[in-house]
Length: 220
Ligand code: CA
Image (cartoon, rainbow, N blue to C red):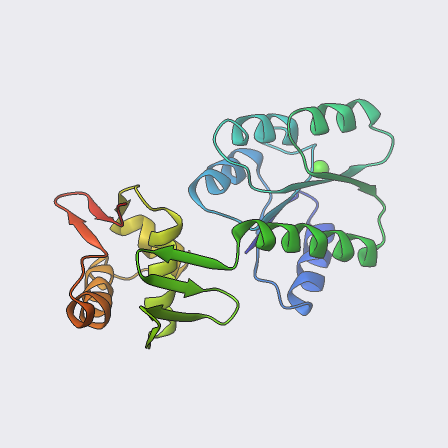
């Protein structure tokens, strides 16, 4: 999911349509403060950030974001703001483009950043004898294939990526089922049960642990 932080509706709409056309999921927020809250609460793949924004400037947003998160940020702002460029890169922007811009160049740069992030994520996640191959989207235990549905797979990957961290039901719901899913958090319990029935029960292991009153954890 890509977040566009932009208060000029025409530009935001244009970029959003182009990105969606390329197959990306996109969210648009026009206010700096709301965008920061969203950027802290979710793990976006990339943030396209305007600097002159209502609520909070893009520079301030980026500065606060960088205190806790390394989400890739591409600054997209008016030409000739050289000081902003220096400030933006100093506080951790990954890239910088000025308006007006060529959409093809923006798309090319986005592809580079997303690819870099994928590479950084690595191809395989392991936990003991459990191996998740992200390229093949396959799961095995001691080389025995484990058949998971998409949501089961996504939940397992999310827990593995955040191993040794307690994940609340709300976090899991948000990460796996998405921003627009207004379901009951019990769905997370149900899917943890599915995972246990397909992995723990079959191979006599304990992968996903319950932390009472808090959530779930995969612990080394
Ligand atoms: Ca603006």
